[in-house]
Image (cartoon, rainbow, N blue to C red; front, side):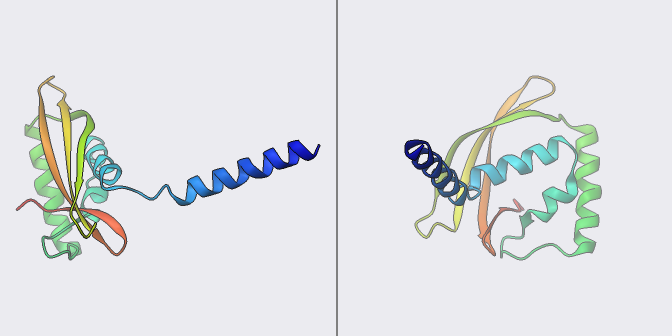
Length: 129
């Protein structure tokens, strides 16, 4: 019984420690954004994208950008799946480049780089304009 209790407590501690260390990474944040594009969830994409200066888009800007993105995806190839190739953090750890291999619905693929920035403790995509 004593061994069972010790093993159970060890497992609970290990699971708790792992959960505390499972903070989102630039790669996981970028992958969520690509999957949101795939699902046409543009609100999620824009809520998790910042301007180059790190500020968020206004509601009016989000409406305009949603219309542009929606129109583009109607005429262009759509994401089928994506996988992370690499992640490179800057020295201060608040910016990263995430390279992904993206497969499209027409079976073409390309390597796409997402520039990520930590804003208010959360990894955000940085607009590419």
